[in-house]
Image 1: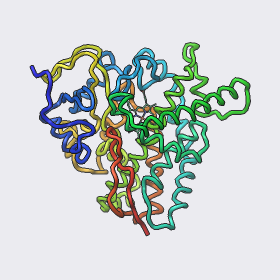
Image 2: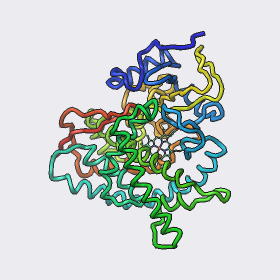
Image 3: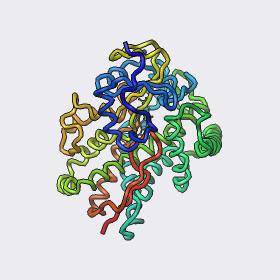
Image 4: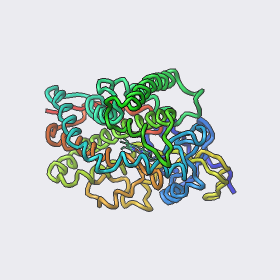
Amino acid sequence: MHRRRQDVAFSFNHPRFIESPTDVMSELREKCPVHYSTEPSVHYTLSRETDIVKALRDEKIWSSSCGPGLAFSKPEVGVLVSSDPPKHTNERIAISRIFKPSIILKMETDIQKLVSEIVDAIEDRGRGDLIQDFAAPIPLTVMCWMLGTPTKDVNLFRNWVLPMAEAVTYAGGRDASKEVKDAYRNFFEYFGSHIDARKKSIKNNDQHPDDLLTRLLTVENDGVKLTTKEVLGFCQFLLVAGSETTTLMIGNLLHRLMEKPSQLQFLQENRSLIDNAIEESLRFDAPVHGLFRTNTRPVTLHDVEIPINSKVCMMFGSANRDPKVWAEPDVFNVTRDLNELRNHTSFGVGAHYCLGAPLSRLEGSIALTAILDRLPRIRSNGTPTLTKAGVLKGFSKLPVRWD
Ligand code: HEM
């Protein structure tokens, strides 16, 4: 029995993984399906689709209560993404009402208007950074609408979101750089007073928007409301989970289409495949490489013993390229069957399946349509810069031009 296997050099911060994550994932699946690493702290990584899907469907063994990151968060204080049934089930029932597809669809016209204004502002320039100028402001502005903050604060939030995403693969708070610590402090100061002000206006029956924040503060399950600390923690999670992921998705999709202009042209002529293109992008370039679970009992898998209470990464990006499940997994093909494509694991699997999936799909579809309509000759204009957050896949800068 192998207790520890490091046959493939892998950690989220390993230069080879940063440069070629797909190649490293392929080696992990073949040679080392349960990988052991001590970098930056002890954890295991599952890379085969069947193992990941099976684990994610078994929350009794693979718990979320220590958080989805590498560091062990305090069990049972987190909301939703950091909780297990029955606490999670109750929270999910309460919060999922806010994310119902019918509620999300009501935002469609506003998002179309927003995207149109963003394109108006850059169209005549002929060049720009697709991330900074286009992909980032869309989901961040939507997040401002949902949390009731002024949309002028989009840039402020973006400066916090990126360092916070980096912290997902840190071993613990002490590893955090000054930038990460400042981001958290500024976030808690800003949202602490924003939430207090909203609570006051709800209590005094003053006028306040009927948005996500109001619902988080008033929703009751079995007569119990979320605490202010829980709402604050959830807003912090949402800011990263709901904005940067969607930004990366839009950037990744357009990057692949610019790499293969024939597919861009094909989509131009076959608009009915826009949804397929979005799902294929999510499969091909999972914006979140993987997230963690903590096992509640010892597990032996592929001859490797995973001791109880280990942090174990479920590598979504690898499951999506597993040749046992996907035909020609390394080919980007927007004509794949939509129903089959939706089996990708980029939004997670099982009880914690992404609540924001309908919203990010809608944002992606409106963004891609706007590019096809208004900047059809978009193309690369220099080397892109990869995002610094080890757990994320995509770009922080994507220079483009159009005419
Ligand atoms: C392309 C964009 C997105 C990707 C790739 C993504 C990815 C994920 C993944 C992988 C999970 C599962 C977490 C786990 O199993 O531990 C998740 C959960 C979640 N996501 Fe997303 N997400 C995206 C967009 C959004 C948006 C736009 C929102 C909200 C505005 C959102 C809100 C959530 C919430 C609330 C959960 C927790 C669900 C639960 O624990 O029950 N996400 N997301």
